[in-house]
Image (cartoon, rainbow, N blue to C red; front, side):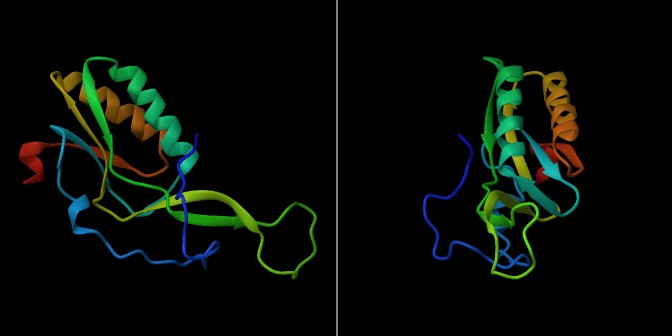
Length: 139
C-alpha cells in the first residue's frame, strides 16, 4: 500500500507549501551509511515505495533499511478533457518535499560494496541526485 497520511487538517493545499525544515534529518541517526539528497525536489509516494521494495530485496538479511522521509503533501489533478474553472481537482498522489542535504534512507550493513550498490540503485530510481555518506563523514 502506498504511503499517505491518515488524516490532515485540510484535504488540499496550494502548490507552494513550505514545510518547516527539520534539523534532525541532516545527520545519521540509525544506520552506518546514509543516502543523502544533493539538490531540492519532490519524491512521490509511488517512487518511495518502489525504491523501498527494491532495496529490501537487495539487502535481504545482509542489512537493515530505515526510511527517513514521508510523503505528506497532496498533489491534485483535474481529469482529462475538462474545461477550465469549476474548482480545484481531486487529490491524485502524495509527495515528500526534499530539501538539499536531507537524508532519504539509512542502512546498516557490513560491506561497503553493498552500500555503494544501494546508492546506485537509489540514484537510478529517484529523480533527485543523491550521494552515499558514512557515519564518520556526517559528523
